[in-house]
Image (cartoon, rainbow, N blue to C red; front, side, top):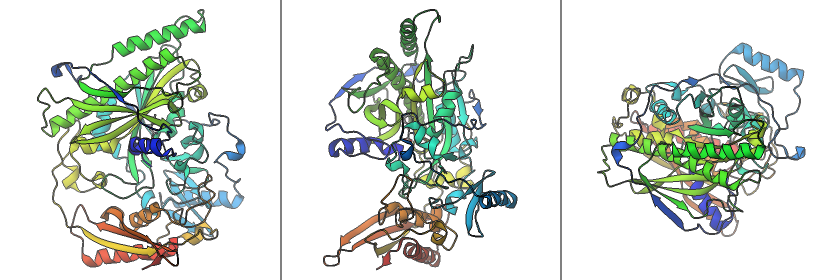
Length: 578
Ligand code: PHE
């Protein structure tokens, strides 16, 4: 589930009253919008972008160990790994000596991998395939001439230092605790499921969002005399099992930002008075934010008591100011990006076509109230980012006991596709000089397609199993290339949170296709679905569109790939091909 899907999900959830992966809301109808517009002559905005003003810290945050932020029943905690045996320790040492980075190793009945110098032992929860591990460590955001890095720098420049520190987190392996528990994700949250998330084992996974580092980043802001730094941004690669199409890839890049305000004034004053001057400070900072020039609509009720409440610990007036500061800061970011995209694509605003945006209510376990913004671009509303007022216990646990603050998170690819006119997310991973040579540091230029190679689509139809089979150990699920089976289609213990894995999950076929065809798979769509009237068995038919971005694929090559997809679907997910 993607950050960028959240707006649609919230709206669906509102009408259907369902919980979704990263979002959850139960408000029946979207309240009417309140429009406001501030027209400032365009020549005054946006502020100059200081491309090279940002210093990015690439050191990892220190190891962390904190309890989940709400009282969690220990029996419901997801992270339960059994203590290692001496065999396990020996195998981990062995992984370190063979030194083949990110290769899945199977030996003497054990499996594991060395990832960025750290050994991980696989277990029943493992579902990360070799094809994903092969992409770990590319650090696309750190290559100055890569569109993702250029976009990161543009975003960082809207949150300048020394007020903001800029962090990069290269190691994608985090604990289940840091990715979910500490942020207050309920134990049955779908984001934890093995159908959505890549697990290395029951305690570690490939982070699904940069918020996995929120606690450590907030700790880095813990009060220090004379420090003017009150915020940060984090950039990292994140991993989610998802559909295959031109805007989804299992690895993408996120940025996250936050800013906090401490109680203000002399400690001899009462806490209440210090809070009042903190509120004053937020109001002053709000007035000093750069002006923007676009048309923004907001919902009437930004603080719905049930679906988007102001936290108990917070003062209403202060939260209103904080939320305004958050939204104005992000409007400035959005405007900077969209103006850059408009001038790169020669779409002038002709002075009278302001960018249109709208704020909507959202849900994240670690912020309340929460929002996301959608922007109109080429006649469609794009969901761009999620944000909110940081949950009080998160700041508390990071040692920020006298603070309030906001946080936001966004997917960099979505902005970069828009800025550079890049039509397919797979291109970001291209090593083809015809792609890479087109971009250079600090410049936003339109991507020139080097050629369009023919697509070749093939259908795969199969009967799915009607019920989960019995538990199978991970080693017996390994495919011909040593791929650990995906979750859902088998009944190995799912995420620690899942007790009843589904017989078939769409992400299973996505994973097989990705593992077999890699970036040669352009999209995979369900084209037919029916239930046999007498046997009650269900049949599905998926269309796989094979296309290389760099060359023409040969028929034999595509046939071989497609046959392998069929074999793996049978072997790993027990389907019957039709
Ligand atoms: N981590 C969230 C996601 O990936 C985004 C987010 C970050 C939302 C920070 C609010 C605050 O969906």
